[in-house]
Length: 402
Image (cartoon, rainbow, N blue to C red; front, side):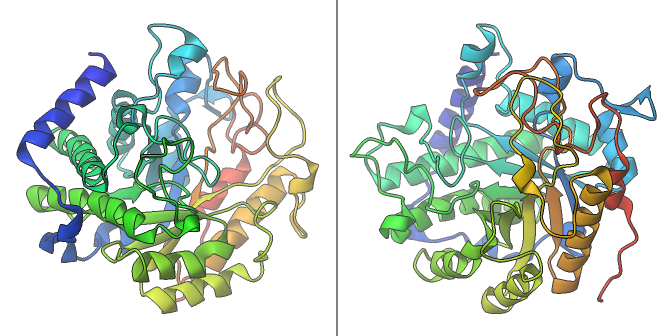
């Protein structure tokens, strides 16, 4: 079934049954504790959102030259959680591949990935972008289906019902994620770029914390409603990029946005871009945040390159300026960086580290910027598709501070 028709049907059903009020606050069932099955231990996460696309266009994953199931491979290496992005309706995929193309990172594609993750016994972090395309600090574009909304109440209803419908369908199929992100790298908020003037104002960088908080609370309320229905305790995370934003953003989202019913303060950490807090200072920043807001903290995205070579014509996103002191651009340097970062986070009391797109190897896949991979020199696989020893950081024996 076409994705648009499928998800529209789900949303219509949800609209008939549910009416979330922006002014009603969060549901009482939201007071449940975070899922101890995730937060009792340390999350070793891998974002595998690109795998279906890579495999569909010729990418092959190997260990010691033998073709293997990549989900099983990561499980055996020590990963215990798979992170997956979800776009609302990414019809732009057809511009890249043509009519009839799979809508990658849309609901049906993500459902396939969730199933593959759970078949290997790995938990899932479902990352709602609330956009048809990438959501990041510079781009938070409203879904095409919502761009004509003018009232915050209607937007809250749309966010609630969409989030509820997706999770309800997953729950019916035994695929409910153990963790949910409400937004992706929401530094200045959500749905605030390239929006009509009449769209509700959600940019927190322009002071719109109240509206942003209502929308975030609507998404959280949908998760908690599914928890009540399913008897689950889903871990809810919020996400910003760059540790320099941790203190002010999470303080303001709580105090000015009125968002309290979340479990994890998550952030992206790419050391060559995020330089205001150094690698050595990062553990202190995490400890400070935990003490200030009494929430768990996780790195939801990180990566480090292992070579400056390029496997294809797609320009590498990581260049020669990506190295930081003490960690050469090599497989061993990549491995050492990940081991030390993970140990530092354990020592600081964080609850997890997730590697962004360790399996985005070169293939015939395309996106908006090229064919192949812009991350092939930062994957945990070499250019022939063999997993490298850098991936051993997932199963490394770390020293616990407990």
